[in-house]
Length: 141
Image (cartoon, rainbow, N blue to C red):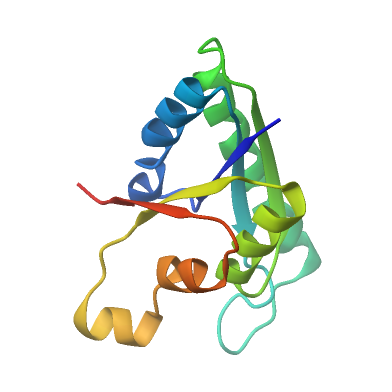
């Protein structure tokens, strides 16, 4: 079955990609994989995340994705969820798209610019550069 990958980070901005992805999936008879990347390598620049914090973070993401999938149920699109651990969210998105055979990635760009983009980088930019499938960017409203 053809698949649309939708990476999410629990922000309202990222969730704006869900409806365009659903519309594509409905029109093309694709399924959707909601993906969250648990960036659990470090809690901050100094202190590593403890195993209990890692488990808590993963469970929170699983719950978040499960709730979204439940809300989307009944629209005729098969929805699956996945939480992966990775230090580099952009690489995890591209790798998941490849390993799951996604036809496309639909994601929101947070719209950072200037110094914030320079300092934080753009996950969307890095996904575009590394993914082997088309990436549809949804601008933040």
